[in-house]
Length: 93
Image (cartoon, rainbow, N blue to C red):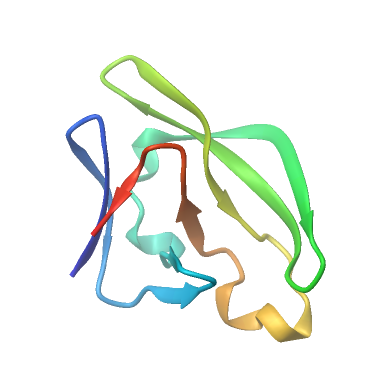
């Protein structure tokens, strides 16, 4: 089971992550939605598409744009549509 942990709290847990470019992408049903707040941030990946971001909020602390996902993807990335990946100090193990 792969877990994403921030601020000593498990914010996602799955045995079905997809690893791309060293990042574990968690199925959307395996994140704990109460810790995620959508943001207006976006970025572009040349081969995956346009990423959207979440702030991660645990115990009244916010990790800005610490999670991202692709709501729409290119044909090459269709296996991670909606899946969530992490950075900015979120530990994935």
